[in-house]
Image 1: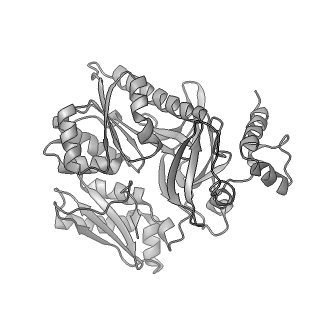
Image 2: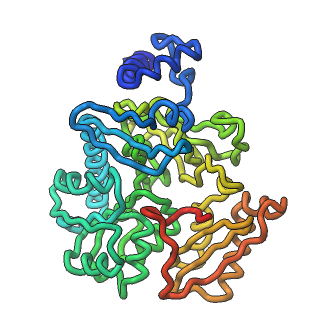
Length: 412
């Protein structure tokens, strides 16, 4: 099947499920039967708010619906999955986990036995499908709600002793911080989803749990698209999942209001050939990736990127210039047990760190490193767009700020 034929079929399917897409093509003078992918319109947040995130609910049978934060119109986002969408997502995650678990066993002379798994995460698609994925992997599975106090998470780990933990980075931070010795749980593998997990952070966390960095699998996805990519320690890249074609576009091509990014950065745009009830055809994620490239893996061309450095699109001043990934990477070069919160208030950037190994002297070094290693932050300070940053210590018993689900974010 030629790429053009595949695109034609995908356009036809998207147009049938989302009739407004046909009108969108017509307004731009595009022939659905003779379009290259790069000619098609970008599906931006503005287009989705106008056509997809409306008060009109879909009425097909057996749909799953996931609701997230509201749009600029005040309408809460409702993202639909058909049974086919659900099955494709579950199968993609199952295949990814199975392949990774097999690879880590093959690489070891005395492979760790993986029989029990625990899902400890937020809400949404990943959380709702975790138990079914574990079942398909042949694992004895259990779960715990992220909303429960951390003491109950600790008790659950101690009583069930799972070899595989499926969780979010901020929850793992809390578990490690509140455990006498995280190695006591007997966890052999960790799968992450939902938040940034820089390599320095992964390495430090692996050491705290008594495992190797490649025993941690960081995955990247979204409710809109589903499973998108997973981190390969052997290639130092997030590898795009099968069935998805990625593009990396300059920010100013997305919208003229965006300023140019760094030379190795671009905005990730995705086309999913397996998603149906979301118009996943040149969908703009607003995630900024670095070092986007195509590489050969086992004789197949695959797409990948080194990290997601930040997001763009916020209306809050300067927020889109700040990379939490870079800040966390710098902090974990100095301390191995850091949990941190980054806030931006009145043009002042504050990094608040909770760590048992953090000294007062380190605070000064961390501040200096962030100002000089994170180029955009240093430039903003030099240009007086941002005041000099502050780095402070959180008390051991201090409750750090938490989002409703995700905690690793920029607090305003």
